[in-house]
Length: 439
Ligand SMILES: Cc1cc2nc3c(=O)[nH]c(=O)nc-3n(C[C@H](O)[C@H](O)[C@H](O)COP(=O)(O)OP(=O)(O)OC[C@H]3O[C@@H](n4cnc5c(N)ncnc54)[C@H](O)[C@@H]3O)c2cc1C
Image (cartoon, rainbow, N blue to C red):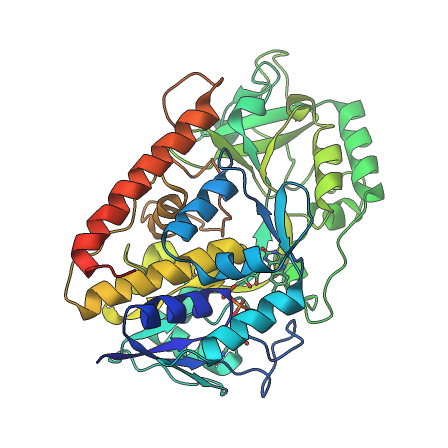
């Protein structure tokens, strides 16, 4: 019987261990807690939820709902236990965090094929079949070992995330395409502000509620990547001379240079989502929506992802990961969870299962390819492994990264959900033959 290593007993690690052991593979699961703690975890439980107890929505007409349906199709332990321990939370799936992590821990520790080793995993041996799922707060020793395999320049330590907006919610009549000084093509969508709009925006930005930094999130990152509200606090024109500088731009409507400008860049080739360039922020999510909607072209903006800044160790996955989640040049070494650049509990858990499927295929010398980008799980994997991505930033699951069906807006969510279901079911069927799936 094969034996594999899974490093990290978080959301991704427990899913990978559960999947592999359920398919007859012996697993050594390394979890350093409670002997060595991360700065955010507080217990020795596996699958501890470090912050919110919500796993977001279950509606199959949303990207989060589709992802959950696909995880259920793959026998997700996290989802099964979440259902057993859920608490009332409207349309969202939220859990009693103690019952949730307690049950997962009991399940994994009583699994006959899983040996849980409570020790810090220090050095990666690329020759041994291993899944690294050590999360956004991977220990320093393991970061060094990982950097030895991937190169230090392929690891990031902070996430400075700008909001991503749904293209259809942007008022194209108020915005215009152009690059500064007409360099290159018209790659940017510019949202102009006049003096009054700019001053009103800055005043509200400074007044808005912010998320407090964790104590372990020191000020180092602020020097390299400042939140817009911090820049705004340095002077009324600070943003206008930085991220919102209008130089080299002429608004075709007025024939003049705008007083200030917010630049948006296509998030994907489809052009259905736009990133706000240099707009990383620590405002609370409702405040981001309120303040950013003060920008005239964005008065009805729909947020596909909110901005944030937090400590997060993750890989430049488009450069180092293969589509089967193995590391380029190290076919026995797989990555899963937040460290791959997915963002969120469910997204991490989902890639944990997928790394398990992929490693199992490798052990059986069978081919593996992920589901299509019209599925939620497939879209996540395509996003993190797309070699064309420049300036890689983590993502949660959202419709912006999923293939969009070419149908009218009305009824699109239903079509998308049906197509994702069909595509995923077909992929699962193919997997049956590949892995001799067992119930
Ligand atoms: C402060 C904070 C708040 C967050 N809040 C939310 C939220 O509200 N909602 C949300 O969806 N997501 C949130 N996230 C993101 C969240 O971490 C991930 O969504 C999810 O927990 C990642 O799953 P994972 O399995 O990749 O990592 P984790 O769940 O962190 O699991 C990784 C495990 O690896 C262990 N480990 C690390 N290094 C080693 C080592 N060398 N040897 C052995 N074990 C090791 C850790 O102890 C940990 O148990 C938050 C993240 C942080 C840091």
